[in-house]
Length: 434
Image 1: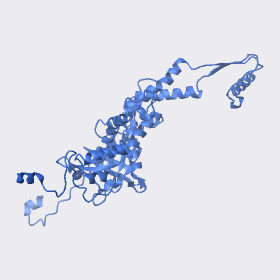
Image 2: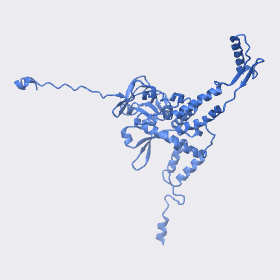
Image 3: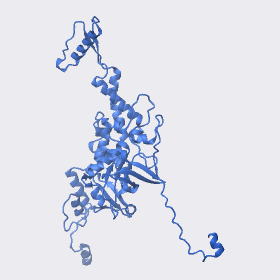
Image 4: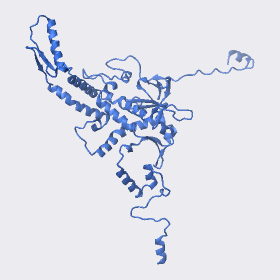
């Protein structure tokens, strides 16, 4: 109350003024990774995200990044195998009931976006392959999933990791990026699919290449050394020339003539040399031969990093530890289910609403196509299931894509039992006649 109102009373001061509205305060949004200058001894996190890892303790080893490591055939093959097998199988939506039953949801919008067309003109398999490949190679993968007014996901489109700035407001995360239409956006984690691998804080993923940087650096250094040896970048021969020349220019001219004669493809292995000239070929040293042989160990270590069986990337020296069927099962349980499980749970956080997840809805890859048996084995399994009785004839026909039968929704009796519909009960008749 003002001084005038206290002296003359509340009525003399006129009507009370409405209080001014409080100033709107925006929550502070800060970047997860500080953009302060980075040093070379202890680089900041954002420098690693751009593709450069910390320097190795071994002097001379090359720095490791996803771009450089992708040039290694084994790294590219492992990422291609994982992404290809994860993206070529259907990604279905299931609902788990409290009693343990599972029901497949067929009419959901995500069923179309994840298996047919993710965004206008982009097949779903292409989107899922790009996400899985970046996830395996870089440890982070992003996809924008906006929702319409009704709450359904409109489309799913990939976003390059280099163009995403991760922001933080307390425990919430936001992503600043440019979408496929060229518009700058800032969205919450509910509208951004963020796949992260080997995360320490739950939000920032780490690449397997970054974690095993020194082993990967050894593999890259060995590949570079092997390339120099095989392409002749190292010394392959020693040329001895007579030391009787008028001047240095004549000596250099003769040296060029001999070198060109040796490497001339039209010489057919018979270079023309002078009377006093000699060429002494240098064979591969023992150390170089061991280096070439050690690249096999590097390839196996890279496969172990990605949990990929060596046979899947063409390393067949050791053979298969089991038959083909058991090897496929081991590959599914040890490798694919590991990578696919992380993809399923992290995609569900952004693509399914809280109510859908609380109702028991989940995403799950159907890997049955990878272990699909022969026609004979499939029919024998269905015959045993129907005659078990475990499955109705219509359920078996549905698995084979056949139309249902009118009387195919009843379970058949067990193999040691018989049933005749409409037949009188013999037990009651015999009992009554006795």
